[in-house]
Length: 130
Image (cartoon, rainbow, N blue to C red):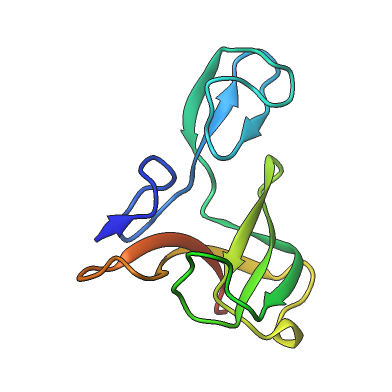
């Protein structure tokens, strides 16, 4: 398996997005960068973000963006992870009517396409099953 980009997420049975926490203002951001996008400090530490969250906003993408080889339509939205960050993300559920504000979501790894002979992994959030 190949990740769409190294350093965005951990792999395995309990994946996590890899963000960063600013040593100056304490805020987290994703993806991780060398400087804080909120206060400009260059003292940040990598951190694993929560793998569960709540759906904040959503829609469906019905036309594939350039270079995308995954399934269409697909969901696209914003998931709030704890009280620390909101992440713009793909959703595994493509029907907006099946989603609702505050819905519990879990991070999953998903094959988005054309890694030729092996899966090309990216992250997405899937509705939590009760």
